[in-house]
Image (cartoon, rainbow, N blue to C red; front, top):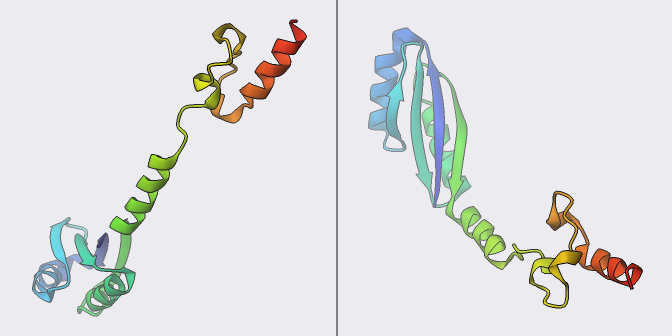
Length: 128
């Protein structure tokens, strides 16, 4: 399921008519508007294609000068990001390696970007 917010623009003199037509359109949910003619609605769809069809319906409403997607949420996209995070090695290996002594770890600001295991081995051999 996708959910997207859309900012609709109209002239202030047409605002009441546009808001009423958006509410009656059946393709979006009205949320708010301001006196300058900006209207916020959301649309939902099973995919991007369905959302684009609904956006076209909104754009065709009389007196709408623009209708632009601003924010979009996709359950599929969130699921794929969650999968990456769940499978990520969030703790650097140097912190879980029982063969490395804590006193041999040199921290320089970012453990994820350092090959500290290789560094620790070099450090170990230099201090023998």
